[in-house]
Image (cartoon, rainbow, N blue to C red; front, side):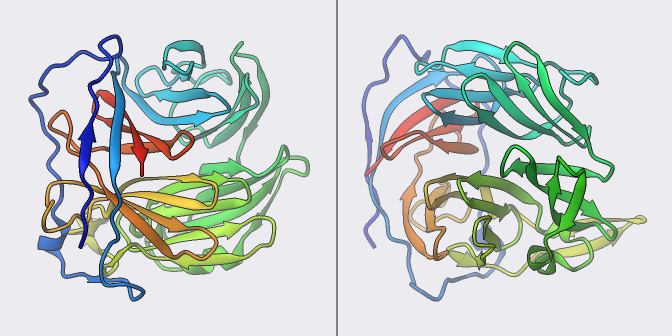
Length: 338
């Protein structure tokens, strides 16, 4: 097996302050907890090289960082604001703040830039969707009558949403903003028609063009839904695991011994990028970036992700020209995929 070599280019001093972080992220050694087997198409991962090109230290607790149309965007976890950054990651605008009002946010799990001055936002705690500008003007605000937690906008008037159904099941639907009507997507929902599927398949909802993707944190399961053709394909991660079991405890339920298989996922074009917690024997404390084809769900290749600042990457995003960004606690690293 050929493993990647990690090359390091000195970081520009104007962008980063170096210091040691005492706390370290302890990676879950899933291979020591579960027995797993490779997917059937190949027995091993195929590795390529990765190159660190720059980094910056983050002054704010930024999450859900993305790059779109020449700008970076992020979610300030404490203030609940959406921030807009220039190409040097300097904050140039912001919208929203913590609060109950239409122009304020409580918990944003999905947001999508719309042009250069508006953001589409799904608020999990408010069960609401809105279009808001960086002037803090709210152009559209809709409060769902059902417990919609997440979603993506397919068009100006059509949303694809996830709600919690009876039995703690995941429920995927189309929502028409013009008619104020919801239509269940049965071909997706049949995948989650079991008690507590909302816990078992808890994950991340993503959209790139015609593709809507849901990646599960605890289950060896992801799907891609083509919103143009209606085609649905189900994929699995590089190494197969049994789904976690649900344990009844004290009148409630919880997952029984269910480590996270993945830390994060992001899309670009027709590719799915997964930051996997399932490492390799030669690199037991390092996460791996696995890439899959959205058209076929086939595995493509992998990259060993370096351990930096005594931590592992917890989230990532695609920039352009095979450059990606990875967040390591309070640092943001920019890397080139070879």
